[in-house]
Picture 1 (cartoon, rainbow, N blue to C red):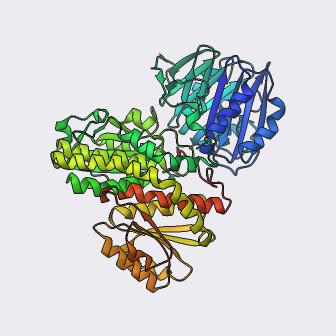
Picture 2 (cartoon, protein in one colour):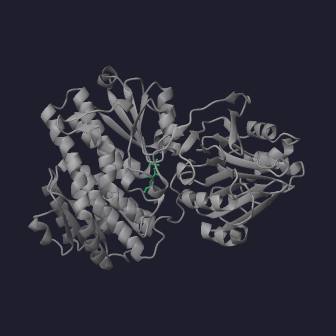
Picture 3 (cartoon, rainbow, N blue to C red):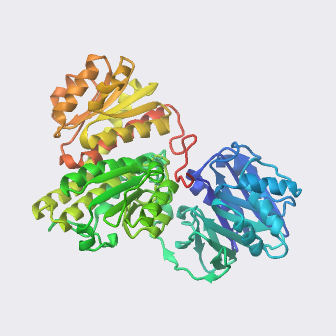
Length: 612
Ligand code: M6R
């Protein structure tokens, strides 16, 4: 939700800001803006809409010899996505600017106070109060003014501030919204997320809540916002590189990321599943065997696609480990009465590690005595720093707003965790561990093998489906969450209304929707609920629903039900969720592409949802 980037050093700043914004545009694309220092003045450019409009506007400034600046890409919360509401926002003099990610919750009362004192506002945003509040407290010391202003603020922020009268300095601070600094000998950087820094440095420092940093050319000072006490923090080295965040010849990041899934699965299990012995090693979970044996219940907390991964994990953990599992959408979890104690393990699942609701959920669970383990893709993200244990998915940077490889990475990590718990609690014998560990590794190879042809088959099929108004996805058992995931993928990138259902639930209401115009993608692998799912498919066919079936190679019965069948190889049925996700992702991608939608940056969305 909003991307911010800042630089001070020896290089020309405008290209660095634009490149940073390009890499952060997945965080929001309602408007973009930047500011740079020009002698003792600040020069500001802003544009409504995507970054391209800002790039056109600043073309003239690319070569400007300024070495300090800030950039912002906006996901609108308060105020429409207009030019006036685009960041940076200025104080009354135009000499002080602020960029911000987050929500200033008490902005209404602060604005009233500032207006009464004679401040003039030019936007509808909550952010603008920050500029005027800092102005109110500003005498000669920018840092002191920022501290005083932040003491008055309620809500979340990652912000960057520049003041024309204190040139070549950036003050940045965070509370509940992500902020990472990049360091090298000659320059200092700040950004919402690591990809913006990758072309320049891989040495980073993750800021925590109540921390403020003063960036100057090649040096920085970190302090607590409230006390001003200086602190020293660990420099981390990121093992992603800049090319990993590029499209590599694919038309969209989403398509590239779909094709990266076999590698993402292998990277996630590599060194953790020992194929020869079937042993699973997860030291980063940081819980002792005794602690794991004492767990009486597991609470899974996540949002969106990550929540779908949690739903699959419930089937796996309850079946193989015998521990009851609750699955919650984080925004619900955080506001209901939680029955938690130290014998409940809370597991958060998040690609970004920054999702506000999931973070709030684990903080709450932790305050009630629960241990927290997070399954996360972004190294150093807030969730990983707050959890007791971590299982990283090694999917690499995911840029497309629609989550794909992070999802199959999460499924792999959750399956591995199931095996690990089965091993520690001795609910699975060595042979079973070996068989299922090998099956997980095998499924990566199967996906790699089928992807190119499956994409071609789906490209042909979608001519009959791309202009649908509605779409249903159905599945049973382990594939019910995959039906939900298929529907989410399709609606978020193609804007077709789509619903996912447990196939057996159709007759309790949704079957009323079925007619000749209703496409239904049914996931029908030859698994333990195959016959039941086929019966549900028959019920759809009897009502003339337009069936698109995904089934197991060699299942000739499916071809008697519809012309549109896609066959997938037989794999161990526990791993079907990973395999059956692939056609749902490709169908959504190809339909969205055929409809001319902006696949990587769908309307109204942002990759990282850091507000509640
Ligand atoms: O970073 P997270 O995994 O916590 O994000 C959760 C959701 O916001 C995310 O999965 C979202 O639903 C995606 N757009 C789905 O493709």
